[in-house]
Length: 298
Image (cartoon, rainbow, N blue to C red):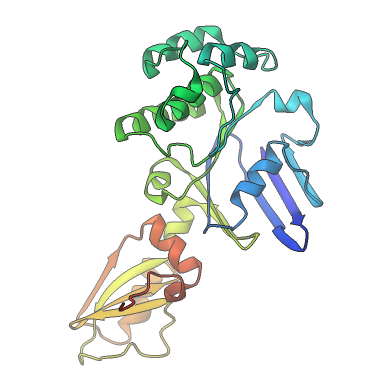
């Protein structure tokens, strides 16, 4: 549904997007991850029509986003810095969104009132950050969007409300076939909801795969070599290696079966495959130990 091809966006001499290409399947939840400054917010602003790319193309359902009023009426977005009118209440913003979202559902708006339990007559600027984020979800989900674009969507929400919000979003995916693109630094949370992941760094997409493929193409092994070797044999291709006592922990870019077959030639006393989290995959895809947390004595 969402397709970005060789997108470039420059600010002066700086290329925030440097040939980005990604594809978000219809009805999927796509997690866009990357370090600070990778270009995540820039691509989101291009997809929502705030910025226009300098080169390349961005489309949703085959239609370009820029100045496409009919297409934008099917897209709802919750940026990290969600905008509202300074003196507006939730009810005021409801009337505002109804003006340009033809599919806006007052029935759903009333039902969600029971979920969020916020006084709709309170001025938004007087609400806490978490309550403002709840109000944003209340309004955007009432817009009945075909495409929902989220930037750090649950930042500021308590654990119960985080679960509630994701339940509502996933309900739209399952029941209405909505497509969700979400950018977040909370990789543990993305691991629970995403079925596709793209890793962005320095304005480029390093890789994009389904979460299952991503987890199947990298493995963590705990190994004890027969001769008690202090070093991993140099011919074994590892992204990262560490050692505690006799146990070597190896990160390898292959599946568990391939890795175990490769190590079998060294007759190890122990080989145990351990599932990698999305956070670990993210760290090692971005450069292995060079991107890991560094131990510094101060």
